[in-house]
Length: 138
Length: 500
Image (cartoon, rainbow over all chains, first blue to last red):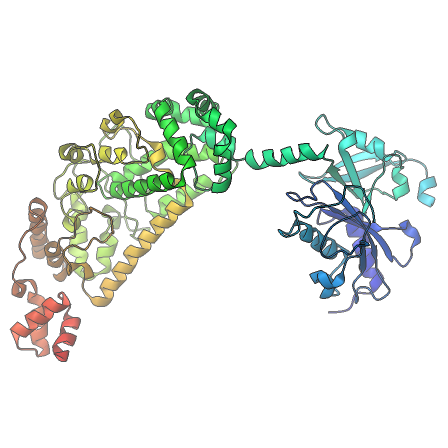
């Protein structure tokens, strides 16, 4: 398969995010408006999955896509406080503990990771984890 | 930013709520987020409990839409805010309980425990409030009546109404719902009752009618949003080759549909076992004969009238030997179905109901399995079992149940054993009129006297003996022994002879 250049892929993802094509439980978009011509910094939100402690919560994340994206995975950091095994004490998402980051493929995107994080929240082992009060940030 | 300074214009936004379908709304690009929220607010959802997310950002009330660079055609996620922790919990619990409880109760507790999560059901039923409510039959009755479908069923079937009006029965049902063992036992009784019912002439049609008049509307009221019930029924009926609708109020003289016949084979539909019989050449005469003789009125205990008479013995024995209590044998003979109704899942039912002859279904709750996928599966399993049996016969060239006198092919307790003489007589002969007649008389004889003595083996195995002699086995005594040992199967007999 031909390699999709970084900016093409990111532009496509931007459109998906703005028009909310696909999943309605995660959302993402460029952080700095149109000023960041390299499209490196993104915002993401995850709507807490139902039947879990995260229900009705919105989690905000910062996403950084490095120059090697999509060959190397983006870096995710939670802005909203959250208690998850794959998130460290500073809110950084630990790539080694999240399947799609540790086994990153170039076809993956920001949405893939956000969805996997949401699945993590809904997983039977994590959905009852005690969480910090809503609205608190790292 | 350029966009922030550009003149205000109307932009159309797609709003994607976390539940439900998305919609579009138009708003001026210079409005604030709060204004957008007010536009989206409804009576149930005030603006203060709406949260909006765009491009990975939670929108703040005081910000302008333009400050987020929101453009025409973009989508905004809408999430409802939970008012507080406690109410959220309450909502959660209510949501878990709500879909099951009213529907169940409204249904009349028909298929309780079938598809439900039993734990949840238990919790629900053991809840003191629910128990309190349930212990009051009036409340339960009112709940049932509040469902229009149930009401309709009740209007069409006075017996059902009577049942629902019977507080004892309601209590029983609730007890049953609480106690899984009791439930299971009732279900087992049901299974047995149904399988017995199916063995009786017209019984299947009656079941079908009952299903159409009671179970189906019930199911329909339960699964209202799902259109699949009809489809399922049709598939079920098609699978069983049942395509005629019995006319209510008249004697049902239509023979049982044949679930095993090829779909187009009308002749085969005369006798449920015709296909099986025809699968094996030797049975051709038998199948045809019964096809022509199933015309006597429903419930008449005459030998020829019973499609299974030749196979399984006298029909009046069915209900009485099936362990049905409270109905004497003569009652069973004139109306075997009425006995069946008493054996359903209604241990506390009023006895009078069982006396009503064949007109209306007595107890719709006795047959909840009919509509359930499990029942369908069971029927299919049964079907498969019959097919396997047929294959086995074809392989062996002889019916394997002609050997043991007490083998019950259905495993139904109390089912009259297969009469080996009738089977053997019918099976070993080529389908000539003479043998068909002899088989017929044999059948009639066994109906009146089930323990008729077997003819001597030389006579029974005439054709096989001739075949063996042709093969060069000249010792008739040995041949007879071999045939006896092999149950009349020439191939096995030859094997036996060569081995000995």
